[in-house]
Image 1 (cartoon, rainbow, N blue to C red):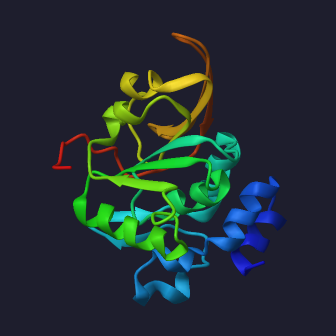
Image 2 (image 1 turned 30 degrees about the horizontal axis):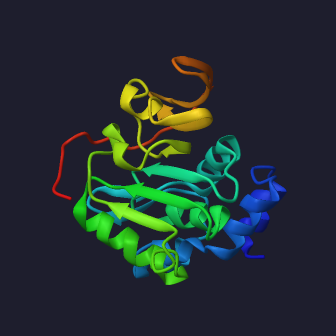
Length: 209
């Protein structure tokens, strides 16, 4: 068990065995620039280039605990950045699951793919990366058991909530809150808000696939 995982467990942010195992296996140091290696286990956001950051570990732990991912799930990971959340989710869903990663900045999309495949998740067909507008989701691969969004917006994009399966869950920052949504029936959602978070904005500019 690495130091970061132990700290997150001790502080009560990591509670679920599947998520704990993912944090222990998918080390954050593989997703930060080499000159940030010594800071990889510090509980703070770190720059990864292109004006973007890799999220604070406590925030990622809270989001994954809310998301409640399981083996065999198909998960949409919006704003995948340098690939850490995609790799964590790929470890959890396993070879019978799928993680669809969307990143609007091509350089980061390529970096995230490369980083995630350090663990073989791309080669094994578990993780797929797309350089596209995350606010529109990826309708061609929908519906999803879970949707994770790591960039903030003023509201949940309707295109994302529509791509959830019945019973599916979505976690994303909305303004300064973490927003939890569960799809009960078509156009019927259970929702909760958790205040006190800060994220980079969700970029909606389209890029080439």
